[in-house]
Length: 67
Image 1 (cartoon, rainbow, N blue to C red):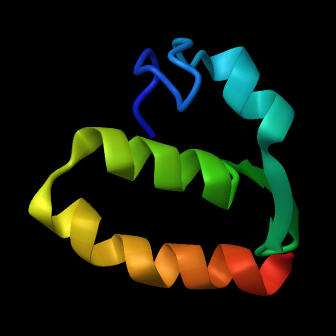
Image 2 (cartoon, helix red, strand yellow; image 1 turned 30 degrees about the vertical axis):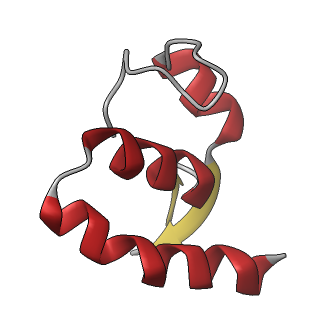
């Protein structure tokens, strides 16, 4: 995640804001906070690198399946 980049509304993304949207997963018997798919997608759209653009269709599909 790129902290400090603008989101879709033009507001800078802060760690606290990411934490509000974070999702909790269980891995190795521990609860772990991870960035939401929506925040990951926004970060990859902003970065606009080839590898990020290639990942976007799969990330969007996963997000849509959660809805």
